[in-house]
Image (cartoon, rainbow, N blue to C red):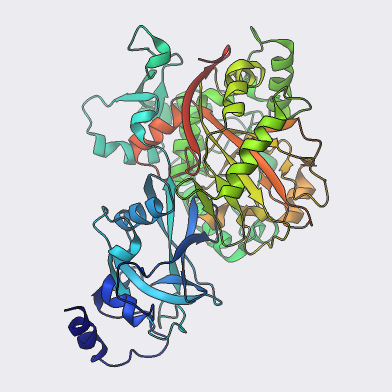
Length: 582
């Protein structure tokens, strides 16, 4: 039966050269067309799968066939050859060793990659992409994604090792509204999201239960809008009296100038419409500074910044994209100055530096470095299937258990308590991973090589180097100090969050996070930061991630496709307060 099916497909004749469109065929027949050499179950089509052009949890899906890596072509967004959904992402992510897919992406074509298939249809329950119905592309494997009349694109996914049921619980009182209305309300400027500062513990044994946060919709309403117009303070050109969305700024500040110009033009129309409706720009004494990147909440201004509904509504209406509006609400607890009350002197010192710079070095973490190094480097070298992810640039992330790290996190409250205080007093330690950077990196293959923020608002990552990191040769992370206080105009697309090196270095002091093993550093990934592709040394590091305790649960509740938490981690989901890990 297999031979008959294969003969019938082959009888259709050759496909047109350099096309990404073809009929839907079962994966078993596609294996013959692509020259795998066998139709048996022991010789699957996909001998390897990885992510390219992104990170170890998000990027272009790349398949290894006949010793060459290839991509999955997508046609125009409205075409049948562009079918690529969460069902396919679920299958790919499980094959990569993560628990689920949380997003799909159309990514730029890479000329050196062959086109392998032109789409896929999965039920979502398959174990491998090869088990889905696949659209055959080039029998000879020499074509590229060059669909005439449409921008060539390849299929990408965003994966996660987390599920909502393991995060702190979040309930949102919608009043008489339906849950389906929630995303649209929060993407506007007349409603906001508010949550209780303290959670409720549903069980007597807090360590065995998840904290529950109660939230509700706050309606600014027309009264607040009128108040905003009446109470607006005098403006000046420096404070926003002139149009802040001059497209000429795109060339200086953004890597992808063409896309940035389009976004500036669209944002200018939004700004003009808000002004025409009577909303006035913020004045010099508003506690905000405008830049081509966004609104900056400087640490000295934050204590006096008015977070009332009218001011919040004006900021959203004038300056922010829909997702940026939501993140501003979600980060509300992080914007104000944090108190050092109750913290040890060491924790208070970390908090004060984080508040000022968005990054803090910790010279000596006091952990068992030898044990942690042995565990982490063993996991990276072992490449355990299901617990390891890699990128086309050679970056490897391992999600194996690191007992030495977990003992330190529970036993030393200094760093976790400072982090919780920075994040509003309540934090979730989501998880960790060990990461290996190869000696040779390129900007094209190493996506963090551009200045960027993580498109998730305020969150903290703790980096623990497993060996000394040379500031020039060791691929150190670089951070633009003070940029953590920016509320960026846009978060929607990758191109809107990559910034020009010259602009960043002219605007902010930059610190290279190199140094001796045994220490570490913690930084807010809302700050502009970048990896360093230049260098000749490898780098191994353990990364631990923290958010405000309610934030990722709220994002899941809203259905917001942002990396909260980052997908490729070993999940812990520990609750953290000013006293340390609970």
